Image (cartoon, rainbow, N blue to C red; front, side):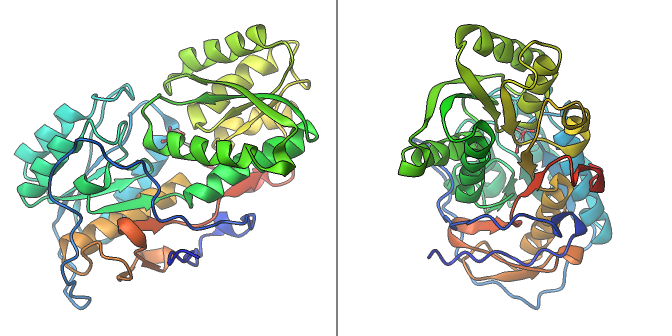
Length: 357
Ligand code: RAM
């Protein structure tokens, strides 16, 4: 087993968390290629260092016009507020690979203490992030990792293996064991979706999934309209398709909207990762039976606490270091500077009304 241990997450949202067989997996991202810069620090931490107040913590999500990102950033704002820092939210309107670079450069000029980033591409932001680090700014990736050599920490929503596995197990159960399936992802460069898809493909190669055939992977770019059109295109191109699996909140909501208004409703399975508030109507109208997610606010909150602990010198990013994350309790840094929020939750018609995010 990997040294990563699942933290005990006390939030109510996880009270009904499905105990998936999460195999911890320290290396969650592809190795960086061609990005140079300071390596992840292993310097000694001072667990008793006082937490600094007045720290400038800026969050740069994948994109701003995504309800998921807004909830995530809201959690960061609460955490930084609890720790008496100055929270700032900036970001592009599209999730393309290079869209975040100019924002990082501006944050460097503004002398932020910490940049929290959900990277649209693991490498495109690397030179800028390493300039930030050279200027003494700490970099905390959350939700979607940057290459390991250009950030200090990565706050992962669940283990990468756990998410990849749950995507496949939900699909297998919902299609009754066999059939053609397609993946409708976010952007082609997204670190998080690509690592989940990699695990899902490995799962599909296992004997218990031999009845499932992945016919294609398409990209809606975390753009609602593009995702909607991709869903429509999939169903036209693959008449035998049994399921669309969208490991993105934008993609699953757009797919469900298309399917709910089409003749495919109730015939083609729609599953993946979505927010309960965006998916509720499609669960109620029978388009969607089951999907998964974590509480995005908790990722932002955990990233906020990690940011302040890092900038205060309580942690440096080395494996085994611990820090307190307010209402979420204590967390331990795993391999490669990774912190795992907790297991994903599966939402169904039975439990969806217990959630409001
Ligand atoms: C979208 C984004 C985000 C991802 C969720 C599941 O909102 O791609 O990065 O974590 O879906």
